[in-house]
Length: 273
Figure 1 (cartoon, one colour):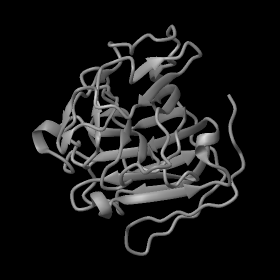
Figure 2: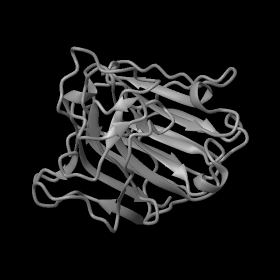
Figure 3: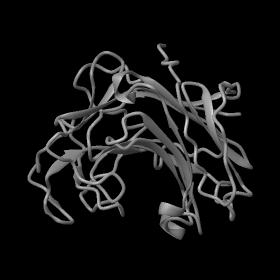
Figure 4: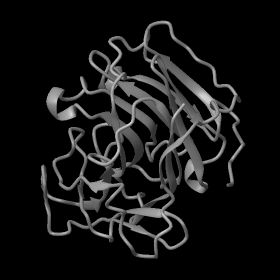
């Protein structure tokens, strides 16, 4: 697998009093047993494996004011026949209504709800993200008690997020009761070339007392239970993979944002520790 090692600069901010973590070129912990994998080796144009993934469908904004309508169409998520799952965000309403009126975009959002739940482990993806104002690719996880306790009590682990307007920077974060949204515990890491130029590997190593975040095997942040109290991460979580358009954090696309916009995912793997 190709990995970009041009790690020229790192900026890491933990949104917690007095915490500062400097990036380290230390590879993540050796992975244990493979618990889940999707290598996305289907035929070109084929859809997702329903035994591994389900669709979240709709244009509610998902609590973030997102502008896309997420569909179950292969126009928005399909294999490319070259070992990748491709999310395609289109500047097209698809005839759908969103929370703000007629939808301006369609895309896709996949979850392992009802298929995979994991409690601690190594969560990893290799992907090539799109660039462009208002684009928001992410690989993340939510507590399986989401429907019972709501967010942020459910907890959220953002293994990787990127704002299209910040092409050099990846964010890894934790959300929980008392530290959600702008108060999340977050680490950010910037490299010397846009992440959208190539595939990169994004990893979270999750133990009973901390979560560490990695880009291409380089550790850039570690958030402990003491820094994220109360700790909402000693329970099962399911995975989410999506390409959002717009929202309260990235803002809306502008005239320079190119559609179709594509997120290419080489694999998703989960290992025990």
